[in-house]
Image (cartoon, rainbow, N blue to C red; front, side, top):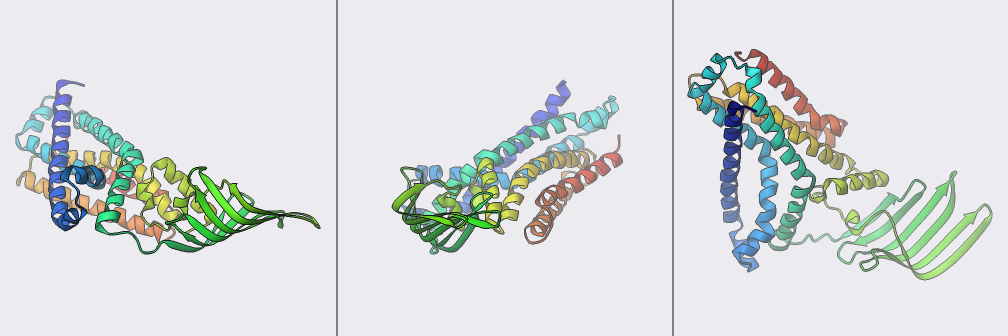
Length: 359
């Protein structure tokens, strides 16, 4: 990279991180004013509040607004360069528009990778801290601790169910499991109670009756208590609409596989979240190129016109992303298509703007 590339890239990254810092401070101040009473009631010091809540809240809000921050940063600093006629000098010096976009592309890829890694691992961990604090001190614990009528597929041949389950005590009652081969039940298990054994990291069944069926022969055994390992954990039995935000990508992948086995309706939402974590970073690169092409022209009205155009494009992108998400979770649109469709559309917009831009 040459001196001109470093000059553009330095301005790009500095403006981006400065805007993130500025908007983060504003967001924290607004959030603090709304939750002042809750913070006072908690009796925690400022350091404890920051460590237990804001260290999770800040990554959460930054990840949501990350593409918008990038777009605004590109529009703002590029418009300043255009108003100072620097791009006119660059193009007059023989540098093509395609060559001039190289540092923008490099900066966009760097920020996209930063967001991608954050979405996979760090933001979900931050959401765990944020959700735990809000549950304990702000919203209060949920009053619905019991689930009823839980049914799921354990493996390719086995099915199980729990009549009721208490998420607080991690225990339930009337558990059953059946194994079916060639349309015949070959194994049946009934237990009065099921409880998660924290020390052994498996499930403890009490009042167990097992039946092994081989044709006309049947072997029945009774055990006071046994320990078994299943492919579901206590958190998998909890009805939590926001659990997908607190799972890292490997954990989310496992949850999707379990939801498919259980046949639950949450499969679409979980799959949408998985594809969104990969699609959103790509939007950073696309919005970077769109912002650079729009703002590199010197026009009457200066940065104000560029920022207005940028905000309109950002609003259209957010609305299209929300619509595609709804069509996927509530309709028949495949989650992969729903997550990547806005990127494809805006990639075509970026290509059109590039073709129409003065070279």
